[in-house]
Amino acid sequence: MATKTTLHLFDIIRQLPLLLLLSFHSNVANAAGGKWELLMSNIGISAMHMQLLNNDRVVMYDRTDFGASNISLPNGKCRNNPNDLALKVDCTAHSVEYDVSTNSIRPLMVQTDVWCSSGSATSDGTLVQTGGFNDGKNMLRVFRPCSTCDWQEMGNGLIQSRWYSTNHLLPDGRQITIGGRDAFNYEFYPKTASTNKVFSLPFLQQTNDPRQENNIYPFVFLNVDGNLFIFANDRAILFDYMKNTIVKTYPQIPGGDPRNYPSTGSAVLLPLKNMGAQTVQAEVLVCGGAPRGSYLRATRGDFVGALNTCGRITITDPNPQWTMETMPLARTMGDMVILPNGNVMIVNGAAAGTAGWQIARNPVLSPVIYRPDNPSGFRFEVQNPNTIPRMYHSTAVLLRDGRVLVGGSNPNEFYNFTGVLFPTELSLEAFSPSYLDPKSSNLRPHIISPASDSKIKYGQSADIRFTVSGLLNTDLVKVTMVAPGFNTHSNTMNQRMLVLSSGKVKRNGKFTYQIKSIFPNSGKLAPPGYYMLFVVHQEIPSEGIWVKIQ
View 1 (cartoon, one colour):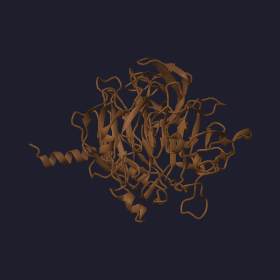
View 2 (cartoon, helix red, strand yellow):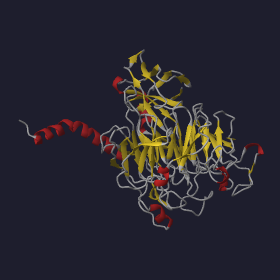
View 3 (tube, one colour):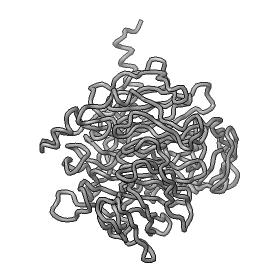
View 4 (cartoon, one colour):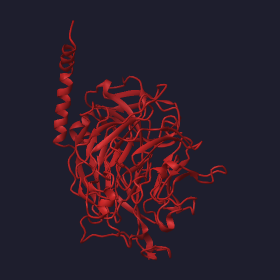
C-alpha cells in the first residue's frame, strides 16, 4: 500500500508540467507586458469621472468650482451661476465628450457642481448622473448619446444630498443611489408614489469611522439573486433593497483595514459563468486600500504604506469566507477594469498615503493583470509602467476595441500645474494589454454577425459568426459580454461581465466559424441595457460589438 507521503509525491510529479508552465508565465509577466499610448496631451479638463456610452464616446467631467479650465465652451457660451464658489461667470467647460474613433474632444456644459458624484448608463443608453457638491448635491442630470447632445439638468431629483455616493442599475431598469457623506440611506430613480422618499440604511452609519469615514463610495454589486452586495469600510452585507432588510452579514475582511474612501481600495464582481446552472456562483474581489488610521496620519505628513492584499469571497456560498491574496505592488486609489477575456487590470494609484488633497506619495506606475482562473499564487502579472503619475482623481474604463482608457489625476484643490508635487493632469492615455500585440493578430476573432446594436431578449439564443485567420482551437473559444461602468474615485459602478453559455464551435468556411450562445434569462443576472459582446479565442478577444439586452 502506498503511503500518504508517496501519494503526495505522485501528486507533485503529476502537476509538475502545469507548475512549470505557470512559473514560466509568471516569470515572463514579471518582465512586463502591454503598451502605453498618449492619445491627447490636453483634453482641457482633468478626467475625474468617466462613462463609456454605446456610441463609442466617453463622457468625462471634473468640477465646476475649480476656476477656468483649459477648454472653452462653444459659440461664446458662458455659464452664469451666482452660487459658484470660484467663478460666477465661467466661459470654460468642465465636462467633455471624447470620440474614440476620431481621437477628438467636444466641450460640454454642466450648470451645477458635479464634483465627486455618481451615475450609471440606464437601459436606453442615457447617462443618468446624481449629486455633487455645493449647488449640485441634490441635482439629477442626464446625457443622451448623440453627436450634438449636451447635459440636461433635471432639477432637484434627489431627496437626500448625495456627495461620494454609489449608483447601481436594478433588474427592472431603475437606478438605486446609496450613501454619500452623512447620507446613511438610499433612494431610487425614477421615483414612484411608493418610492418618493429615502430609505434608511444603518449599516452605513455603523461602518463610518469618526473623522475618517472610510465607508463612502461603498462598493455595490447586484447579486445573482437580485439582492445587493454592499461593502463599506472592512465588511459587507447582502441587502434586500425592496424589503429594506439585511439578508446576510459577511465576515469582516481579514486584517480589518478599511478599503473605501478615503483609504480607497477598489473592487470588482468577477465574471459570472455557467449561466445555465440552477445556481450561478458570484465572487467579489476587493484589492488595496490603506491601513486603519492612514488618513489622519497622512494629513499630518506621515504617509503610511498602502495595503498589498486582496480579499476574494464567493458571495453566493451558504457559509462564505474571505481568501486573502498578496499583490506584487501595494496600492491605494487603484482602478480595477474587467478585460474582455475575464482578467482584471489594476491601474493608477499610490503606494503610500490616502485619497485627499496632496496626501499620497509614491505613484504606482505599473499596472497589474489579475487572472482569476489561475491557481492561487499564479494570478498576478506586472505590466509595463506608465510615465505619468495617476494619483487622486484618476480614472480608467474599458473601450470596445479592448484598450483601457486612462485619464485624470488632480490631488490639488484647483487646477494647479506648477509648484506642486503632482500637478493637475489633463492628458488622456490608452493601455493596450498584451492580447492586442500584432503577433496575435492571426488568432484574434473578428465578429461577422450579429450586427452591432442588435437587440437581444432575455434567454434568447443567437448564432455568433466570426472569422479567425490562423489555426483555431475550438476548445478555447468563449463569448463574453461586459456592461460599461461609471468610474470615479476607484469605484466602477455597474461594471459587470458574463460568460455566455455556448455550444460547440462549427466551421462555416475556410476561416469562418459559428458558435451558438444563450443570453442570460433574467435582469438579476444582467440588468437591461447595452453591453459590449466579445468572442475570445485563447484569451485574445475580438473587437466588441454593442448589444442591447431587454
